[in-house]
Length: 417
Image (cartoon, rainbow, N blue to C red; front, side):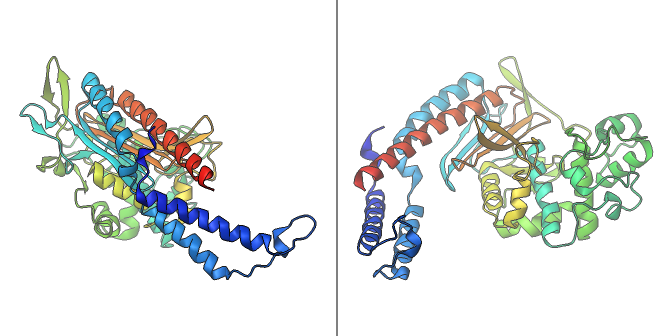
């Protein structure tokens, strides 16, 4: 990488770091220490508040670095590769990449309506499919933060008359419930023309599930029923419907106005419709019958809105820090592969927090690499299985760019010091 990427802001940051260490060195070298060189017995003529102020100014200046500008040359090169890869894989959708809380790349490929050639833009929203689960999880955890709900309490406490009192809210959140897939019960037993809503699903479970598949909490089995019931619990505890709760507690405070809940929003002009590739063209996909219930799916958002939402989550702006740790599986990372609303895994000892989603032709993914503070969001609407290959390709390329940048920056700072 060329060293030409260093801006005047970066040079100013480096000079502040150098100045900081000069002051520290002067303070420590001007007074005798104990024989074991312990810093705890040292004194300094430099006012400790002044040193703190210097350190603070370094931190503030660092936060003002524009990573989009710093990485402009490398991102431009990667951008061409991504465009080529997207064309080759026929990826149709939006891509957003953020590094250290700054969006460094945001682009769209193809059409929200590939038949009429209506292009995707930054305001285009997509059905998030199972990426929606993080919104449901956050709603439950907000009630938990507000002391309106206990994660270890029985589901029957919040859904009166529920058939399995041994199930806890946490069992649902962690996909350790042993419930059956509600979609199978809908297809077998639901005779009405209108799709079942969340409380209808609760009734289906009560009426037709004869037993749990395993002892609650004893194992993990991913199941959409869990999050449909959680959305019902949000409504029961809050006294308002699920959509309104998300709107008032999250969407409005975060000013994310391209985020919606429910199938009816698929008719909005800025929402990408679902399509299936057929030959050289596409055919439009109709919504499935299971869209009456939400919580497991049903949230629509643009890449920008999903990023702003996730940034607020990871930075504990709307939930307590310890609550976010639970969602990110910090307490069980080495033992289980699902937190609360997010999947988790390790790749060569590097933590990965993510969730993918597939529903009605939409294929989406959000991946967070905490060690690098890298977030990659991919949203698509054309039932393209290659989405996952494109997503993995994006992450690999960006990790290379960031690693090169950080190593080069670290080397320059060391040389100055």
